[in-house]
Amino acid sequence: MQGTTKAEERVPAAMPAVRALAMPADTNPSGDIFGGWLLAQMDVAGGIVAYERAGGRVATVAIDGMTFHQPVYVGDVVSCYAEVARTGRTSLTLQVEVWVQRARTGEPMKVTEGRFTYVAIGADGKKRPLPERP
Image (cartoon, rainbow, N blue to C red):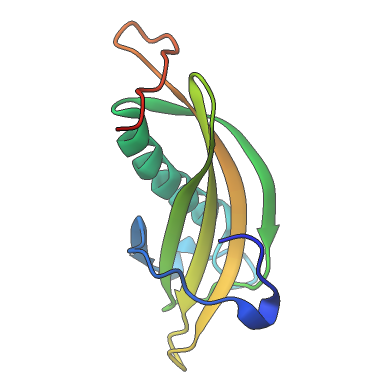
C-alpha cells in the first residue's frame, strides 16, 4: 500500500477488512462525514487484521501519521484496507487505507490513511508475545 505515487495508486486487490455506507447521522456541521467516524472505522479494520495476526485479543496503543486526503460524503461506500507493516515482540503496526466509491459517480478514491499500532493482550489483560508465523 505504500511506495506509490498518486498516478499509480489503485484500490488494493485484497478484500477490505471493513465496508460501511456513510450516512447522514455521521456528518459534521459542514455536512461532510465526521473524521471521528472515519477514524473509528479504520480502527475497527486494523483491529480485525491485528486480531487475526495476533491470534487473539489486541488493544490499540497508538495512531500515527493520519492523513485526510479527501472528504467523505453521505452515500459513499467506505472500504477500509489494513495490512501488517511491522511486527515486534508483543506489538504490530498496520497501515490502514480508506477508499470510497463515490455515490454519485461510482469513482473509487483514496480518502485517508494512517498507521495504527496494536499490542497483543493475554487472558490476564497484560501484553503477551505474538505467535510465530507458520
